[in-house]
Length: 106
Image 1: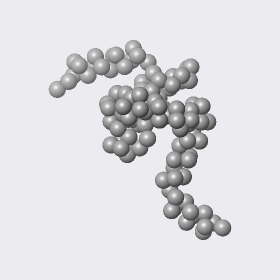
Image 2: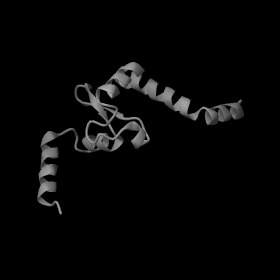
Image 3: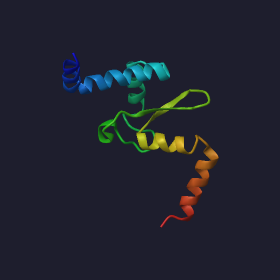
Image 4: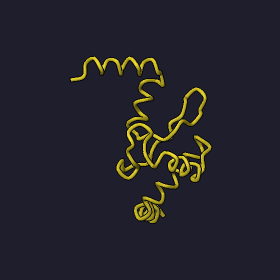
C-alpha cells in the first residue's frame, strides 16, 4: 500500500499540490477556487506590488490579509507578502523604512 501511495503522489504531484492549495484557501480564508480566480483576474493576474505574474513567480500568489480583522486585502507574491509580515503590517514602520531607503539610496 505504501508503494502505491508513493507512486501515486509522484505521478500526481501537481494535482495534489492544487488540491492542498484549495483546501488551505477554504480552511484559512473561506475562499473557493472561483473566489481566488476572480481576485486574480481583478488584479490582472499579478502581485499588487510588483506586477509579477504567477507564471513568472513559479508559485501561486499569496492571499494577503489583515491579521487583526482577517479581512482579505489582495494577492501578493511570496516576497512582498513576507515583507509586510516582517513589518508587522505597520504603516508607520514601512514609511520609516521608505524614508531610510530614500536617504541612503546609492
